[in-house]
Image (cartoon, rainbow, N blue to C red; front, side, top):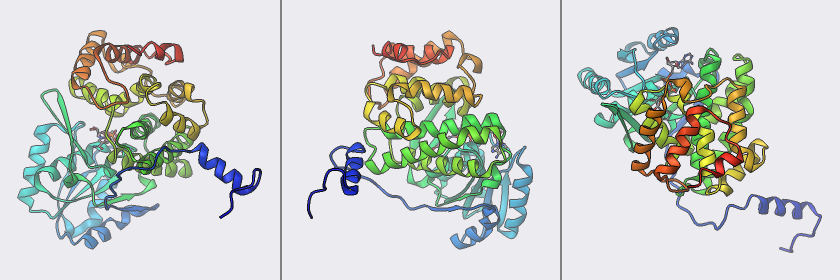
Length: 387
Ligand code: NAD
């Protein structure tokens, strides 16, 4: 084949390839099997999916207020396939609830778990799956993305423990945009920012393959482009679909890469102070990005292209997006004190999470202090994070 002539279409395409250079192509990427059904109205398809899986008896988890009608509809349509239902699900999967639910699943001798709801319902199903080996069909109603990951979490005595196991990765995920149309604007905003955090950390994780980075960028683009419209008008189906699709990609990316300082800080905050999960992610994300801005420059540059901002502005752009969509402005607004923030920083540094730059005590304290007050993560403030 002859070399491309300058100025020809082939030359331009080749130049585009250069701009998206992803470095030497040497990587390991594991592709796991999951069936994704993404279709408006697909809640009605769940019984058919359960039959396809060959599960005669299922445990339904979820459908608590304000989603009781959806839960009741699903329970009714499952008919004789439904062995038992757990309605009330607590956040951060308390160990006690996980143990009781696992016991119930055993008592009912079910063949599979159907989780309907946000990350909490999926999280409880995962806790049961981890102990029992039962497979999961997930019907997500937020943008947490947990349904696409092998990551489980459990909280015991103020400590949130997370891990990975293929036992907990759902085998089927049913996305129905109709289930998200009533998600309140506030929850829409923070949940989508939670998903965006998955994309950000997956894009700069040392073990992320180019395939994972590509999925993460596509997820970030979908989420960022749709979020303001979905917050302005919750009934905007097109925006809702792009958010749900972005959340699915975000989960897939998170499931294929290790988590960095952002997720570690949020897990410590959730475990120690029971802070609301998605809100905490929404607050911390710009500061985690600022913290990693120099060490993860190439990945953050790619993400900045995806949303059309300059790389040095990425942390600030995320902060602006948070303000635009009404996310909580600071950890202080979630009830955290300076003393709490210091305690979190101590534990975060002790954990020493895998991250583009090492998380030492000075860096952790600066990150937490900035997130506590909610200051704008300007380039000047984030260079000062470099300890
Ligand atoms: P959530 O599941 O706790 O839901 C938040 C609230 O929103 C609940 O009151 C719920 O009833 C309500 N809700 C859910 N969907 C709704 C809808 N469509 N309309 C109206 N209300 C609705 O919150 P979340 O942020 O989705 O999940 C948080 C949990 O998920 C945390 O425990 C977190 O650790 C976990 N998580 C896990 C992973 C993973 O990969 N393992 C990823 C992300 C989150």
